[in-house]
Amino acid sequence: MAYSPMTLADLATRLVASADVKIRWKLVWEFLEEYRWETPDVQPSLLHAEPETVGDERWDALLAAIAEHLAAKHDLAPPSWTVLRVLRHPWFPAELVSQRMDALVRAPAAFRKHGVYLSSRDLEAA
Image 1 (cartoon, rainbow, N blue to C red):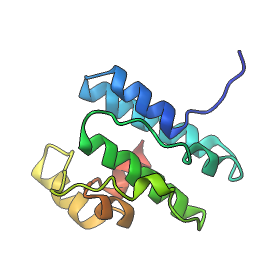
Image 2: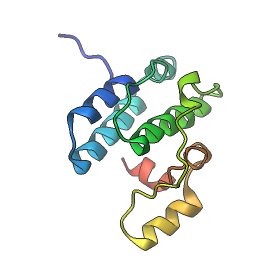
Image 3: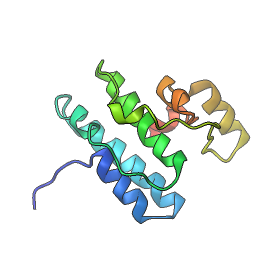
């Protein structure tokens, strides 16, 4: 079986399959790492297919934020499916107050737009 990079739709399927939050974050970091290793002409194709709902609006908004953030790096409009995945109340995934403050200051624009406050440092460290 040949290797193919994980898409956001694949990531959503894997998130649904695991209720363990730590495993879910590892899957997100795995997606981001695979994305980084793909060539710039392949990267946008990993974002287009609409992911199924994860069953938790926070994780659905996170997927939309990731798609919009990564599309912007290619100077592309976000996929149309991202428009409705916006939280009414902000989500700070970090547990420590200092990490939450860092996320408040350093969350990329696409993440803030979707109500997900995750520091850009966390995205780079993945």
